[in-house]
Image (cartoon, rainbow, N blue to C red; front, top):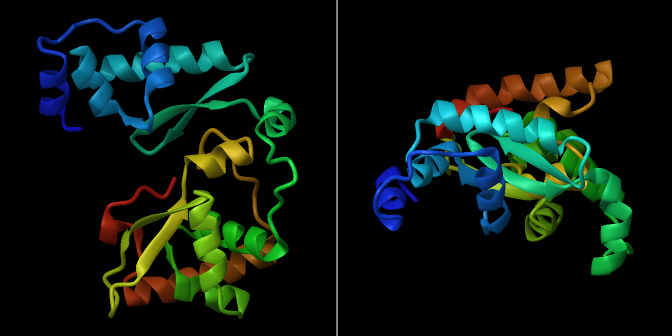
Amino acid sequence: MTEVEATEAVGQPIGTLSEATLEALLFVAERPLSRREVAALAGVPTSEVDARLGDLEVSLRMRGIRLVVVGERVALATSPDAGALIARYVGVDAVRLSPASLETLAIVAYRQPVTRAAVERVRGVDSDYTLRSLLHRRLLVELGRSSAPGRPILYGTGFEFLERFGLTTLDELPPLDVDVAARLAEEGVEDLATGDSAEDVGVPTA
C-alpha cells in the first residue's frame, strides 16, 4: 500500500499516533507494515512513527509479544520465551530443522542477499531442495534477482526466521567463528564480482 492509497483508505488523515493505537494496528495487520504505511494511515510524519515504535519496543520487552524490525518493515511476534508453549499449542513442536536446513539457513542469514550458487559453493552440495523447503516454511524469502548472467534469485531471511530464533533484528545474530567468517567473506568477494550484491536490488543487509 502506497502512502496515497493508505490515506485514501481512511479518508482524512487522523493526525495522531499513540503507542496503544500503533500496537493495535500491528496486531491486526496480516503482514509486516512499512513505516511509511503506518505514517500514511495515521496521518503523521515518519519521525513520529519512529518515536512510537521506540516506545512500543521498550514497553514490550518484558511481555509475551515483541516488536520485530526488518529494514523499513515492522511487525509483532511472540516472545522466544513462550516458544515451547506455543509450539505445543499449534502442534508443531515435533517439526525440526535438519542439519542441511540449519546449515543453509545460517549461510543465507550471514551472507544475504545470496544466490543458490553461492550457497552451494559454501556447502559443496546441491541445495535446491533445501532452499525450496525453507521458502515453504517462510524462513527464507526471495529478495529479488541478481544482475549476474541469468539473473538468479537472491535469497534472504524473513520475519519468521527472526521469530523462530528469538531475534528482533539481524544485528542480534551471534558472531561467527573466525574460520567460517573468512570462508563466507571469500564467497562474498566472488559474488560481488558477478553482481550478487544488496545494492543491485536495493535490499538492506541488516
